[in-house]
Length: 253
Image (cartoon, rainbow, N blue to C red; front, top):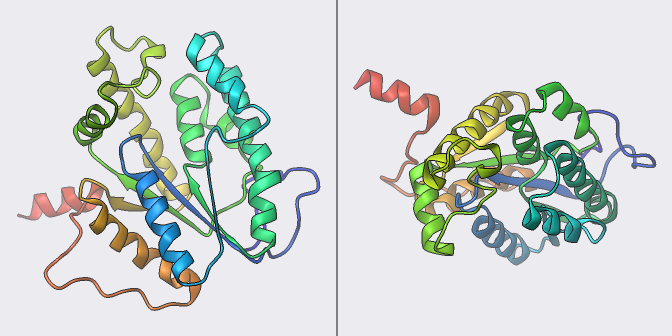
């Protein structure tokens, strides 16, 4: 990959070409990101590629501080956004770039796009978010796993037994009801991801389906990065259209 950033890069960031690939799997909590990262990592390693996975709040520098701040609900939105930016910058400098320079594939379970969306719905401007995270490397591929809010809710309850305070936007005082707040918050995040789709070249994948079908489609997107022919789509099996495609198909039926 070419070491291009969205804005001003970190001091000392390498220039030119890095030998590895940076693949981002984005999506809401419950969209199947972590499952897909694990499946894709296994598949790439079987094909002989070295893979390093990363995600949010994995920095040795500030991840523990972020966890403590979330438990106590003590920090404002701007401070939290800055902490997440530090967390991401530390991982970028000390984990992602070294891995990419060594020729490895880096699989990111979420990237700056979630951080930007969270900051914006909590009061930051889009321009501020762009500038704050402008030091990020431009990935080779961004896959956005798109799942309906009711599916996300069902999966969260099935996995955790309850909804997460932050993933439900309860800090925004959208509603006293946890479930209503969850749907309102997801709608706000969705609006931010909608404009990012064009600006940051997201590839949307229907994540309302099971992990096997999602993985098949992701593999077809990933294959060209390695000069491989995309695996054939099983006969009679077509991904369910989402977003604009779904609305156009419904209107024509």
